[in-house]
Image 1 (tube, each protein chain N blue to C red):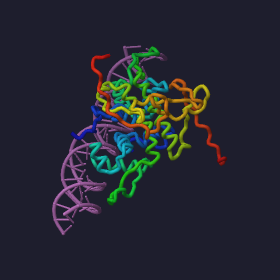
Image 2 (cartoon, each protein chain N blue to C red; image 1 turned 60 degrees about the horizontal axis):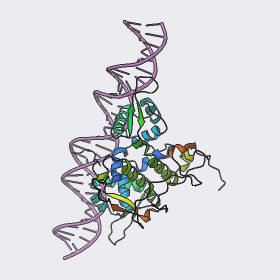
Image 3 (cartoon, each protein chain N blue to C red; image 1 turned 120 degrees about the horizontal axis):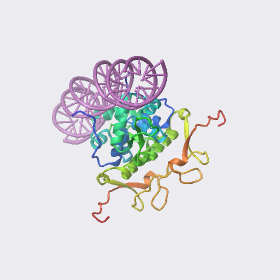
Image 4 (tube, each protein chain N blue to C red; image 1 turned 180 degrees about the horizontal axis):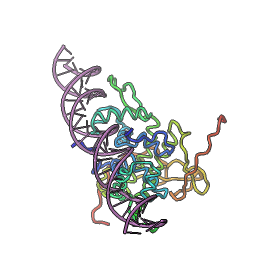
Length: 155
Length: 155
DNA sequence: CTTGTGTGGTTGCATTATAAAACCATCTGC
DNA sequence: GCAGATGGTTTTATAATGCAACCACACAAG
């Protein structure tokens, strides 16, 4: 087989995430969905992508439990694509991508929008990683540990 | 042209990030680089990917300023690929991807490792988004604002 | 009921990206 | 200088992507 390698079954959680949303368009579709887009035509218009590709991606996102198809909403007989909790859970990923661009992009002046605190209108802080006890952690202060054995039948 | 659409020049910072690291392999290469891998063969062995693809990806990452080629390190006349600050800045993205998988994966028992606080050995908390004044923010408490006009020649 | 229009796709075909394997150049040890 | 390891490039085949054309259905007007 010469097909694109799949990360399904890989034990690395990063690879597993990429398997679901690691392609060219999925995260942008999710971005628009977080913004409230729901209809096929809305996505197609906003993203300017080919309809067949959009079709395939939407199906894939539904298969991965990120979107779900709702029968209707405004009376029309068409269906809509709405985010599941899993889909909404990608928000930190999008924020991290956004902040990386804001911090390191070679042409930051071309970035059109800033993510702000709705209440104060001020930019949000960089994502913070904290220990269980609340200490702020740098990458160097973390490490990977083998997953603890799953406790059996003890709820 | 029928080539893959490029997000270069797009005003959305998420699209701009994806332009650099939004493909199948780049984030995994970066993941290994964060782990300390530096040599072509190390990447190739660890990731099990085709050498030509690795070659293309490494070049692309270097072009995007995420990796840089260091002339040597252990005396051998080969070059190494090391992360730039921009490259190390992707850490939160990888953490976000990891945590998303940990929280929503259909088969979490297949995930091999946990990211822990090095000092205590306890899992790190979920990434937190905070306002300038320290308030913890949910997605709904944020919004996008047009980028403030760049102040000209005022330092 | 027939025609027209908009939405939501699918199909066909050309182009590009990805993958495996073979190949090649350079370095390293001897 | 020869054998093997390292670090790639080239070749060739398959899969993914993108555009355009097409089709199905709903709805509205005439």
